[in-house]
Image (cartoon, rainbow, N blue to C red; front, side, top):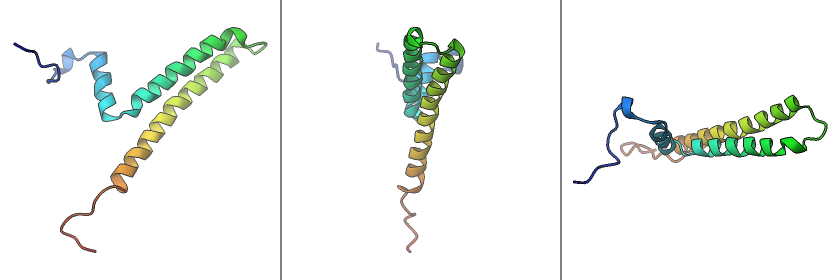
Length: 98
């Protein structure tokens, strides 16, 4: 007997991983935003020791703003792509002639 991994999963049995994969299939730019957030946050933590005379709170605020910009940029890009697909690549109905 083989098991079907792509089948239906009840809501109470879904895990964070399966929810993330479902979200990634619906909108592929969500993982891009998450990866950008993680990369910027990791870089900010790496650069923390070389921040010079900058206050810790200012450094953390700059890191947070950059990480949020990655997520907002990915969301905006996804919205623009979906608007383009919905409005510009849509074919006119077959019964109408202009």
